[in-house]
Image (cartoon, rainbow, N blue to C red; front, side):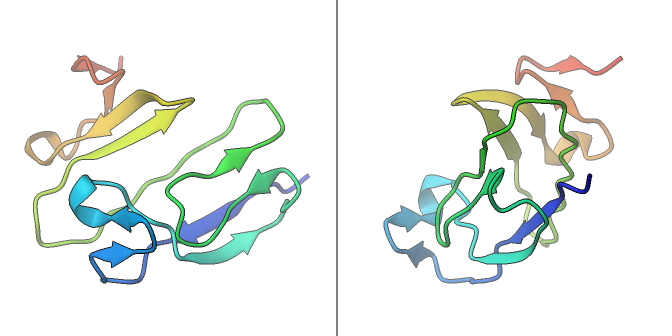
Length: 101
């Protein structure tokens, strides 16, 4: 069963709704694909995506920018992995700088 979804941040406005980019959060503003809208819940200009069905999910992250940015993905309000400019080819896990094996 296909349960994929794709969300984008396309608006370059530094303040969208109550979310400020200066705070470091990306407000998703475009839903490109959602094959399971009852299981993968998203609202425009929010910084989170709710998954209602527990299980194993694959998460792909891509950032296209000329600026050096750090990307941190949170799960249940806890950071689970980080992408940093100085180690762009290495994914970090648990934000404690423990490399994946």
